Image 1 (cartoon, rainbow, N blue to C red):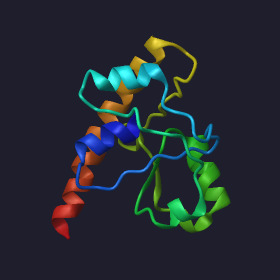
Image 2 (tube, helix red, strand yellow):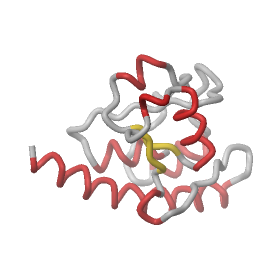
Image 3 (cartoon, rainbow, N blue to C red):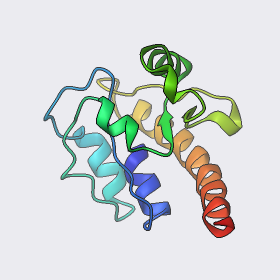
Image 4 (cartoon, helix red, strand yellow):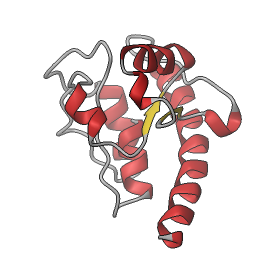
Length: 131
């Protein structure tokens, strides 16, 4: 959901989605697809992929959902320190994984994603204008 919302907010920016424990090749959860479809954001083509060295090396910024993910990436690849941030960095919050937790959990996570993406989009647009 976060990648879809971020991609919608920043259509000129390349946004990729990958996970630390991705169910490789699996589509987005149907609840997530439906929630974003109501906003005219189509994530139905999404297929899960594992975060890998190539994706990390080509990324200017890596946004994760919680401190545990941030720490795991930085431990595995210390060179990425300074490029890995929580999506909820500005609000100092973790975004819980709603997988297999039902509609309300997806809605709660999406609300947190919305607030966080709005702040990141403002910051990224500011950086793009400064180039």
